[in-house]
Image (cartoon, rainbow, N blue to C red; front, side):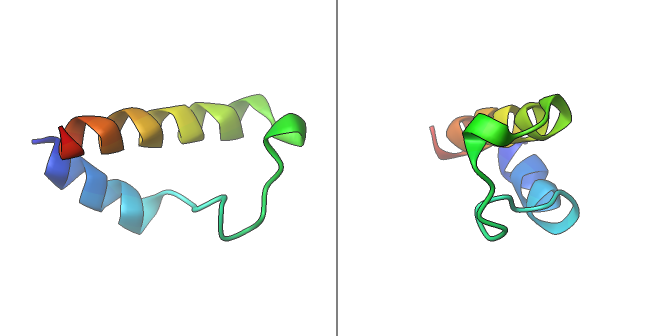
Length: 46
């Protein structure tokens, strides 16, 4: 299930690493997206 969600994330959610976003200056909604993507990715790989 997490593999499917990870693929949907890749299509729909923005990639902040490609935008060179600095985590120290990221807004709360950007940090929430980063955290959600991290959680889903680690669950899909495990």
